[in-house]
Length: 174
Length: 174
DNA sequence: CATAACAAGTTCCATTTTGGAACCTGTGTA
DNA sequence: TACACAGGTTCCAAAATGGAACTTGTTATG
Image 1 (cartoon, rainbow over the protein chains, first blue to last red):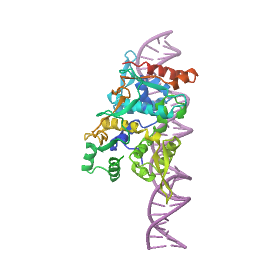
Image 2 (cartoon, chains in turn purple, blue, green, cyan):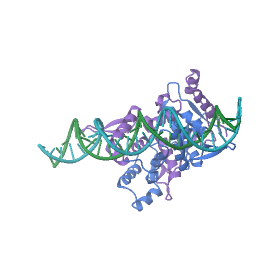
Image 3 (cartoon, chains in turn cyan, blue, red, green):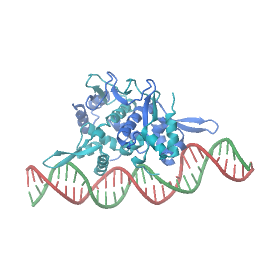
Image 4 (cartoon, helix red, strand yellow):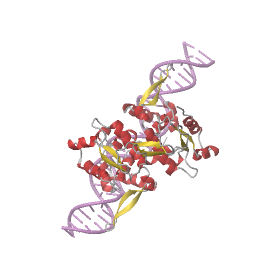
């Protein structure tokens, strides 16, 4: 079976990975976060071919994650910047980086550390409940049916397989 | 240039995406989080070919993210479970799912919602500072040099390009 | 005892995606 | 006029992927 168009997927993770679930896209986005905006800089930093980079950037533009930005009036040259949708991937970057820091660092420790400028402290970014501020784990966070899924079920617009899958996901205990 | 071996990358995001930065791996991991453990169930749910799935699961086992678990003594059958390293990808899943919920949902809204069992409320998982609990954004979180990078620089074990890149990343203001 | 069913793969080959190198285009500078 | 630079595009070979058929080990069924 072939890779599906994101809009046909029910699962948000599947939809999201259809945008950045490949070898390069997340790495490109990471560079945009650290202000490496220019085509040639991205290309050289990553060692990606021009062809591939053009491809990926165009996909990101199509998806509204990135936009072209005129950085040189005289030469009419454009670089690539994150839209609000793209900037909102910040948490994804941090969380992936953190996992890598923890589990993939060599004996010398992680390459970077995080500082929260407002409180001035070295911070471990953590996923917490917006309501009570407690740390979230697979054991204390549950999924429940959202309106998008409810609609699909009401309309019969969902496979038996997906139905079972979500029933399973919602039933998770402990 | 070809895809690099994770251990040769300085950046934790690059190391991490060398493990799950492809079409399928994150989707496989997501199923493991919702307790779809069996080879055949994963295969059918995702529509991935057996060949590919075998490949991905073996990679995940090699990387210590997943392990084989005997679920049927009689038939000597194994399924796949998350190790601690794999379970630690929970925040990654949630954050990606959340981004998809926000930006890729259709007009009917997100497929799922989140409930924090301890406080009983519908929760928006958020990335916060472990120290003061404030929400983290690209504007209030800074990167600083970690021991892994310091060692590499001291040893001269880093390219000029990476050096510039990190200098740039650390200099980010506002 | 033969046969079928099931889970978990493996093998083979055609298709698709990617990498690498060379070429193209528009603009300004020497 | 020639050259440099940024940002591509074109072309082809190499690598990754998909699809279908086959394999293996085990138990259930007639």
